[in-house]
Image (cartoon, rainbow, N blue to C red):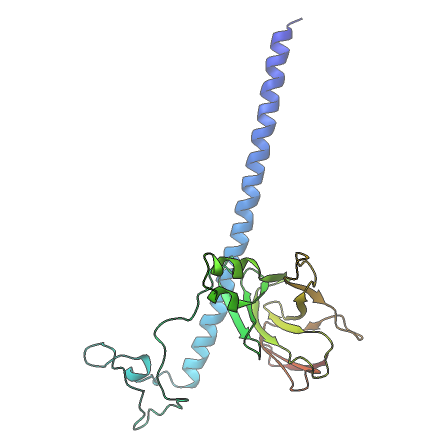
Length: 258
């Protein structure tokens, strides 16, 4: 018997199997990336279609004066003056018309792909975002302003995330203490669904240290979800927070008691 030959063949077979596992894992990664890119492309196509419709609705001729963008029409330099309106180009300007030229805080990597929606809580402490990666993120963004190293990274890492079944196009916070017993975020998705998400300390997959957590909720009633025929363009809660309105590209609006 050729024992050495058998051992050598067994080693080659084991090595081939390990290489096959590595290749299969790599193929899976590439397939997931292709899926993400396809989702992002679909989201961009929707945005382009929206811009095209808006341009057609306005005749495609109206544009903002240079002062709205903070630049001079003659030399492209910043004027430092509030925007003005004259003639046919009139714009509504709130406050004193002076706009900041630097962000108060930047939160990178809240999502793994294009960010499609965002909303601030009424008390300004929470930021909800939705992305093409099908996730809703709820972040205590104020922590990023702390005068410590890694404050931004810690704020991003501490965000609660919930996966939906499709890219998230719009998000909205319900007003707490007005008919609702749970703090809720509504997320409108590309597949026409609306997801309700509970958030708070110790909720869902929170780390157990009092950090922010979140989980999906089911709507109580005959239906277990809100579903439109096409993608959801916007969601909004009533002042009492007991009604949720969702508008879709199918031309319909649904009012749901939550």
